[in-house]
Image (tube, rainbow, N blue to C red):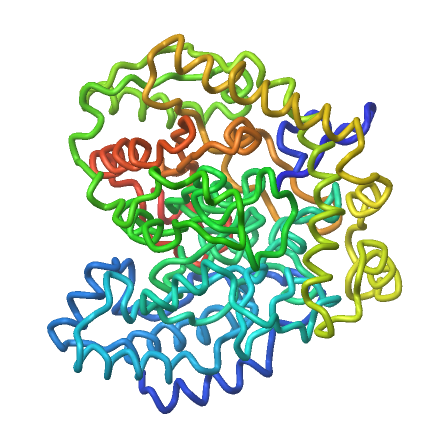
Length: 561
């Protein structure tokens, strides 16, 4: 979640985005690591001078490649899980600069994988995710031996009574949930000056491409872990930017679905208007495969009823390497370009590539209302966070003594040394001051958000120019981690789709001095098929993704010279 603009006179308002091996051995590893979570309040230490990590046989492996290995008998689900767990131990939990992307491991992961291997032998695979190792963000409920805390020490020990709907879908598909990922605490909706990727429970997650750089957020660990090849794919959540931003920062594909396509039940909320879960992957094909599992109607989340007739069981069938041919792509330059020349240069190259692939580029194609979205968006989120998080806490019952946002604020004040060592809880206080969802101010802001982002925003420009999608830089290259002053963002393009509840997908667009940059495709409601088709064609013609080196910024020149 991006952070709100600071009050007038603060120099930070110049920044556009200041807002918001063996199974037995691996089994022992899991047991030890569940007890030895990353220390609370962990501060970034000096990064190691050389890239770390041994050659990894599963590096950049796709879902289809992993399935082929299991089908041929060359590997097993248990073997895959053991390899990923060993890599997590090596790079995420060890050394002078652990990545700290995984907040907790599933002690039953290997047993679950073994059972799925036996099922495969007896009945065959359930589908494309059978035996595939997956990580999920620590604001997504699991009713197992893992906790669900949103990275907050206030919820340590909280084990929900049932899985989130998306977790039920993953388990039914045969996925192996390896563990939970670290995140910007409370999905980055606690402070206006937070450092993305920091949580009281998990410490400071790092970017695997540059260990002194931000992983962005709030799905920080999901992004860093997937980029680092700690899993095949991961699940993140987004209110505004929290899937696409960390995906861009780690050279990933991240898809924020239309609100209503994927259930939010069992996910610690910010906003029922904007929240959604979505896939984070190394390829468009893997993101499409995961989306087909996550999408579906959930009686526990009424908004998903709107997905009937839109949700697809298999999004991979829409992938076409020639998918850009004949497409009309709009370029909303105003507000989404111009804040970082090197990033703009990469996107200009991307536009030329799309032209060469047969797309018509409509340039410019401005979203005329984009500058008017921040204020009403924040108003809606503050009102909804208070109501929604208190409803979530009430649903935990006896599994927590906390019942209100005021209780969370009090807990943080009483535990300042571990929860507030670097930045405060300004957004918590602002939300606490809000009234009920019947308040006229809330209703007015909500109406403004819908009108400005939809009929006067994305829908208007796409209708005017007969567009299939809009494209823009996802954001600038990741900045340095700064737990004292907070994130230093120059710009991003996530807000229009986030406020509208419309889909967007980011794809690797190249590197600036070794730092990843993403290109976002933005569309109308329920246009996931179109966005995936366009993104896949762009990905196949550009092939920008490369694995990280786990080095500090000072060493990145070795990879670019």
